[in-house]
Length: 457
Image 1 (cartoon, helix red, strand yellow):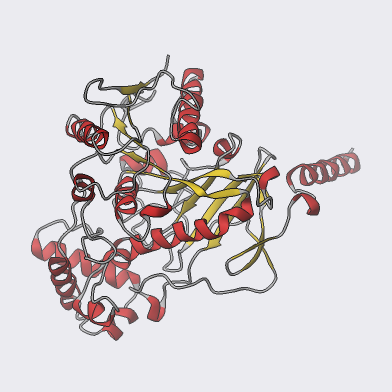
Image 2 (cartoon, helix red, strand yellow; image 1 turned 30 degrees about the vertical axis):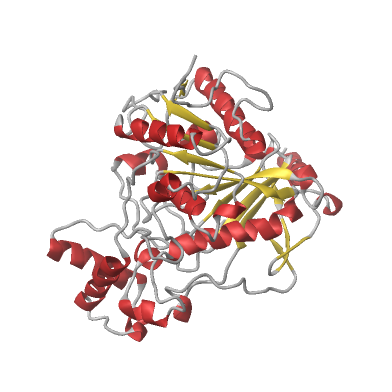
C-alpha cells in the first residue's frame, strides 16, 4: 500500500507538471530590452505570466532620487516566475480595516530595488509580433506611499482570457519616490527635483511601447487605468508631454474628474519641505542623504510631521518639466490626451463631490473632443461586514479576484464581475464599454447625463 501511494503521488506530480509547464516550442524565448525571457503558465493554463520584468535599473546608491535609468542587461534566458519586491513602505498593521480586507496574507519584501513590471498575455499570442492585442496598463493606488502591482486583488488571467494583455507595475513611493530638495534640483539637468515615482511610471509606459509587441501586444493600443492614487497617476500621465502621446484610452477610478483630490505643492514649497525634513535628521549633504537607510528617511519624515503637528503626503507636484500643469488646468486648456475616457467611483466614496467632478469633466470634454466620456458608479455594498461599497471595493470585480477575498461573495457577485470585466476589456479594445456597437452604457453628456450603476442583479 505504501509503495502504491508513493508511485501514485509521483505520477500525479508528473501529470501536474505536464499540465502546468508549457513545452519549449509553446513557450518561445522573447528578446526584450535587457535580454531574453520566458514566462510560466498560470493555473488557467491558457495564460502566460511574466513576473518581475525589470523596466529600469535599480534606483539604489547614486541612482537614489534620480530619474529611472536604462535596464541593466543580463546573460542567458530569465524565467520570469517570481514577483519582485515592492517599493519601500510601512508594513501593514494587523487590525486596521484595509489590512484585514486586502493584506491579511502579509506583506511582500520591500526594497529600493523595485522597478519591475508584470505581464499577463494569452499563451497563444506570446512571440507573435503580428497579433496586435490591446494592452491594459495598470497603476496601483496607495496614497503614493503604499501598494504594489501584484496585490491580492490584482491578477491578469481574466483580462488575458478576454484577449487583452495586462501589465501591472511597481514604482517608487513616499520619500524615495517624491522627495524634492534644493541639492537634488541643483544636480538635475532641468534644475528640478521630485516626481521620481511618476518618472518611473512614464519609464514603464515607454517600456511597454517598445517591448509589448514581443508578447503579442499592439504598442499603438495602450489603455492606462488606475485607482485612487493610481488614478491620480493616470491624470498625470494623460497630462504630461512625456507620456500622453503613448495613451489610446484612459480609465480614472475613484479620484474624481475636474478638481485635484490629491493636490501637490509648488516646486519651491516642495523643495523647502524636503530640505527641512532632511535637516531635521541631520542629513545636510547629498552624500549623507544617499547613505541613509530607508528606515532613517522614513523616521525623518515622521519627525517632521510630529514637530510640525501636520500630516504630509509625499506626492507628485507641478515641477515645470515632467508636470507643467495640473490635470484640471490641462483639461480646461484642452491639452490632455485626446482619447476616450471612463471615470467613476464607488457608492460610499467621497460623494457627491467626486461625482460632480466627473460630470464636469465629461461635459467639458464634450465641447472639446469627438471622443466620448463614460461615467459609472459601483453600487454593490459588499456582503459581510462592513456592508459598504467602500473606496477600493471594486478592485475585486475588475480583476475577477473574488475568490481571494474573505468576503462571502455570491453567484450574483461573480456575474457582476464578469459584466464589469466585459465593460473594462471592451473599453481597452474599442474605447467603448459596450463593445463595437452602441449599447446600454451611454456617454455622459450635458444634454443626456448618464452614469452606469454597477450592482448585482
